[in-house]
Length: 427
Image (cartoon, rainbow, N blue to C red):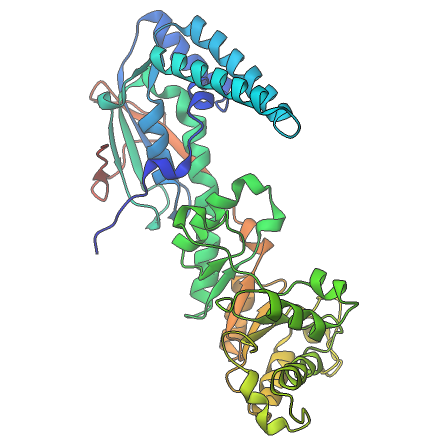
C-alpha cells in the first residue's frame, strides 16, 4: 500500500511567526545569526530520533514548516520592523473584531495583508537547497533509529530546530499512547476523549495522531480537522442535569433534536444504577414511540439500533469512588466501571432480548486496564479513553552528524542507518 503525506496547507503553518523566530529557542536563533554574520554556512546533516519505541507522527507538519520557512530575510532589520507592525495590527484586529465597525475591520485586515506581502517580498526561500528524507506519519520506530534527516546549508534552517522537534514530540507521544490502547482492545473501537484535559490549540494535532495510531473516533471537530471529518459525541451529564437528573428525558430531547445519522448513546451512571437507568430509558422510548404497553418487555428490542427513535448503545462512566447499585460490595475492584458491572449488564440486557445494545465503557481506562478486561472477556463493545493518553512522554532529538560530507557528531552520537527513509519532494 502506497503511503501518502498530508498537503502542507492542512497545517495552517503560522509562517510569519516562525520565520520571525517567535517560537524558537534563542540559542537556535543565534546559530543562524552568527553563521550569517560570520559568512560561514556549512552543509550539515541533521538526524532526528527518539529514545524508546514509538509511533512517530508530526513528520508531515515538519515537512510543511520546512517548505515555508527554510531561508532568510534579505533585510533582517526591516523584516523585524514589519513583523512588529504586523503583531500590533493583529492585536488591534483581535480587540476590534467583536465590537468594531465594518470599516475598521476592513482597514485593519487590509493593513495586515500589506504587511504580510512586504514580509514575503523580503523572504529568500532556500528550501530547494536542502534535501529532506523521512519516514511517514504512523510508522513505528525503534530507539535511536533516525526517522528524518535534513541536509543543507545550516544557516537557512538551524533556527527551526525548536519548532521541528515540538511538532513531532507531542503527536508522537499521543500516537504511541493511543497505539497501546488500540492493541490492548484487540480490534474493539477506541474513542479518543482527552480534549478537555489540555489546551484547545493542540486538539487538531492530538486527534490526527490518535487516528493515525488506530483510534476509531475523536470527540471534537478540531480533533478531526486534518482528516476532514467530524467529532463524535454522546449524551453528557450536563444535559441530564438540564432535565433535573432525568436521563430518560435528556435522551428523548437528544433524539428529538439531533440528526438521525448520529447514533444515540446514553450516559447511564447519573443515578449510580447503570442497568436500571438503561431499562428505564428503553421503556420510555418504547412508550413514546410505539404508544403501546411499555410493560411488555418482549417488544423492547424494537427501540434498539441506529437512527431516530432508537438507542444504539449505553456508556458506563461510574466514578472510581462509587460502587454501582448492581454490584456486590467487595474490595476496590468493585468500584467504578468494574468487570462485574459490565458482566451483569450484558446478562440483564440479553435477558430482555436487547442483544444489539452496545456497551461503551469510560473513566480511568488505559492500556493495562483494557488488556485486563480483554483477558477476562468482559463484554465491552467499545472503550472511551481520556487523560491517560496524555501521560506518555517522548523526547525527540536532532543532532548534527555530518558536516560538509564528513562525519562530525558529539561524543556518543553518530550517523544512523537511513535505508528506511524516503526522499521528500516538494511540489
